[in-house]
Amino acid sequence: MITDNYIFDLYGTLIDIHTDEQAPELWEAVCDHIAKELSQYITASNKAILTDPAKLKEVFFEMDRQERVALSKRLGTEHPEIRIEWVWERLLSDKPEDRVRPKAEHVPLPIYEFEDADETVAPMHLVRLGNFFRRTSRDVFRLYPDTLKMLQSLKRKGKKIFLLSNAQRIFTREEILELGIAELFDDLFMSSDKLIMKPDTKYMQMLLDKHNLDKAKCVMIGNEIGSDIKIADDMGMESILVTDGDFSKIL
Image 1 (cartoon, rainbow, N blue to C red):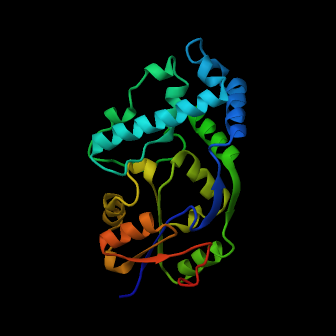
Image 2 (cartoon, rainbow, N blue to C red):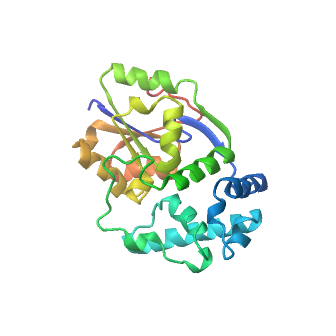
C-alpha cells in the first residue's frame, strides 16, 4: 500500500530540544519575571509562593499532578493532557493552594478541539508567562539538520503531512513558527487542545476522523517506542522509529 499521509511527532523527532525544568536558576528567573511583569497578581496570600523559587517549583509540580489526576478521572483516560495555563492561572490566583478546583471539572464532554486555536485561547499574560518559562528552561532548541529537507521532499511528492504531538499549544505554536516549519503541515494536533496524549488511540483517531484518512495509507514517525510507536501499533498502523534526526528510512 502506498503511504499518502505522514504523521509526525515533534520533539526529539523533528526538533532537537533539551529542557531542564528542575534547574534552580529557572525558578529564580520565573520569580523575577513575575515580580517585574506580573506584580499585580502578587497578594498577601500568594506572595510566599510567588517570591520563593523553591516553593514555587514545589507547588507548580504538585498542581500539575492534581490537574492531571482530576482530568484522568473526568475523561476516563490513563493519558490525560492538561493545559499548562491552568496551573499558571492557579498559581497567580489569590490563595492558590486553597483553590483546588481543576478546570477539568468544567470541560464539556466529549473531548473537544478548538477549530482555530491559537495563543488567544489562553489569556495573554498566561501565554507570555508560559513562553518565558519554556524559553528559559531550554538549553538546546533547533531543527535536526535534515528536518526541513525531508519535509519539503514529502510536500514535493504530494504527500500530506500532519503533526501529532504531546505538546502545549501556548508555547509549541510559537516554537514551530520560530523554526519556520508551520506552513509545511496540513494540520497541527497538539495534545493540550484535545486533553489526551499519545499513546491513547483516541488522540490518533481524532486526526484520522477529521481528515477522513485511511490508516492503511498512513505512517506514524517518532522517536519514542512507548508513545509514537505504541499508538501506531495499537491502531494497526505502520510506524517508523527515528533517532537523532536520522530520516534515512523516509528520504
